[in-house]
Image 1: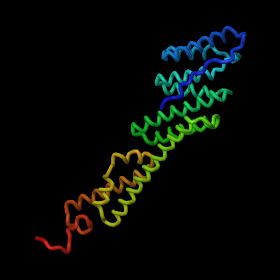
Image 2: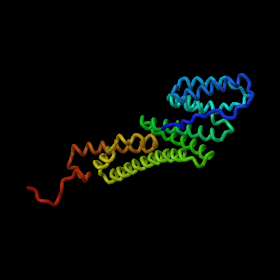
Image 3: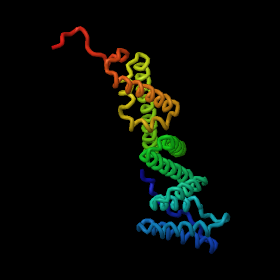
Image 4: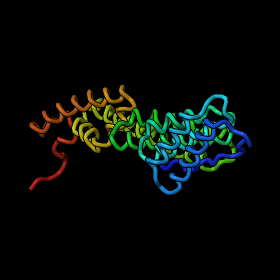
Length: 249
């Protein structure tokens, strides 16, 4: 998921500015130019320089430099540093910068959630999707009409819903296997629990109790099914009993 790569230009400079402020403005402008020409390391250094030169007495809003630095760091794949820069950019009275910074924070967590999901860490991915939604919601509160934040919020929600459905599916399988065990259909129970086992790992990370139930039932039904396999005529398992009532040749 790409961030909102909008670089803020400096607006409304005072006619007379202190020398230090002028240096910060020059560094800021150099950063904007470097970013537009894809010289990202140079842009990063320029925005960091602008922030170093800025003082509390200046009329230059550092949130603009923080925001632009965040976009640059995101492009450089320095996600943790970009997250900090965007968080700093939210500390401004400028609603527009706030809304964009919260949006990009949401994108960072959305990107992180996807990577965690691909690596098999469903529990942390769920948390990251939820955090992404929180940031998109803050962006929407400041700018209710923006479509991108709403779209990404819904994307995160779809992933969360998919996780809920995954847990429900595995719970249903475990319950069906439990019923089969209660009715002494051990081979059927073992088969149910063995199917698509590689897809169950994510659901078990999201629900530890379900994982325990699954493992206990799999062990029990597997042991019994193994015994039945050695004694295929055991009448306790309908699947292993021979057919009755027919003629044999």
